[in-house]
Length: 147
Figure (spheres, rainbow, N blue to C red):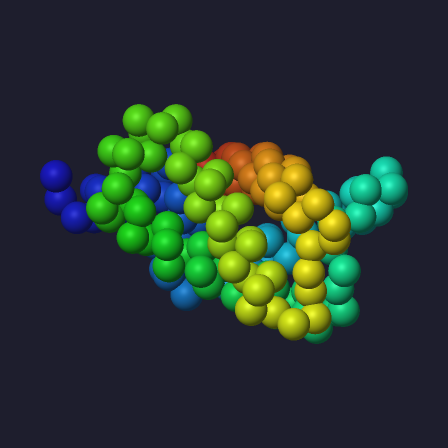
């Protein structure tokens, strides 16, 4: 299979939002920031706060988590895609949760509130559901207007 055809399939599956890696990273940072802010608002509205944070800490969290996510995703897509398929995507869920936890250790102005494990799991599930919905909408828009 040619390299271009393989890359096209990776973009179609939703692992990447564009063939251009720079655009993908920028778009992912913006998308992850919007999703994170929406989730913080939703969880605060139902009296289940997830994070203690300052605004700059939130921005740093999203940027670092997105860069880690893209780096790990490139490695996984190139070397471990069969394992992802066999695990029905559960591996990506675990990786995303670990990325969120490691990022909170790196960012001083942001931390999960009490009962950290439960908050990470709940945030990761909600984050991935919203991200999948957003990627499906983006892909349908791209197909409708042919990029």
